[in-house]
Image (cartoon, rainbow, N blue to C red; front, side, top):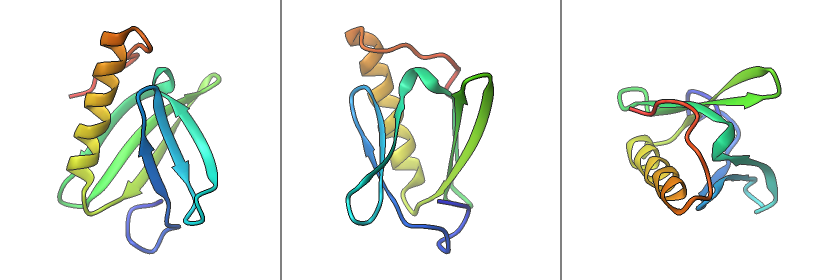
Length: 96
């Protein structure tokens, strides 16, 4: 978590219906359904993936530093597109 390698370490599991954030011990910390994601971007220069998530009436920005931010971005994007095609989710925002 964060914008550099000094943040808390987590594992992000990309699933057909959403994302699961796990601690280094494997404990599920959060589960995010794709319907709640508003926007997603990445910065290959800074190696940061940014996810905007709707939480009630508020939108929260979450930043994740990873050396594979581009790969992770496209993995999430493809999973979200498959979810829409299969009818298991909707894409609320525009992901470019």
